[in-house]
Image (tube, rainbow, N blue to C red; front, side, top):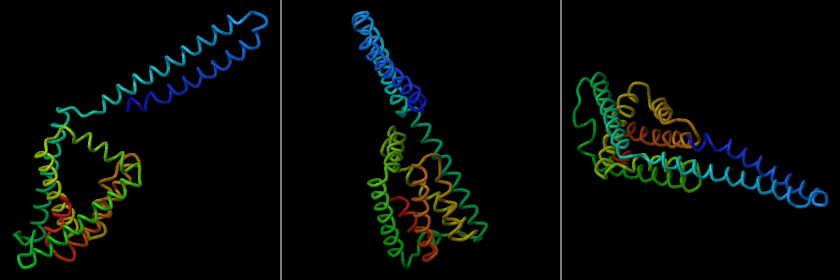
Length: 239
């Protein structure tokens, strides 16, 4: 944010200094015969010094902004706690809502004992397809690369165990709520659209993320509609 805030004023200052630099050179050429080269040279050097000062200020601010963007361990720990609380509340809300809808919850909510291998295989296939889709987006869309870099900086302070546990709780909570309770209440397509909208945010990166979430919501919602249990969708989401 600091870099964006200071970028345009500094560029205006640098352009102004460059104009003064050219003007000083022209004045020096015109007055070389009258006053000698001294006056034009002094103007030229003054304009050049202002240009260097503008570039140096931009560099210092850019380095400060880059340092500020890096997530500290304390900020990472706070993000981890808040994310766990959010997903835990979402999972409990999904379970309660499903309990109201079905009256009784059992192992069948997650897996079909007679066809668990179908759910597992379908989940792995859909998860692999979504990974391939994101790989293509990251390769061809700059906004996707920028978003991934931002998320990587946000998650960088987390230990591997923390990152894995966050992936597990987020996959479980979102599938319980969106594919389990919400899809049962309002239908497959509206639930997928709402899932995508809740992944939207400011900037091109989040627009790409919302479209990717829509593709994921449609694929996972179709799997749950066809199979019933949530296990395959949870596996795909976790991947």
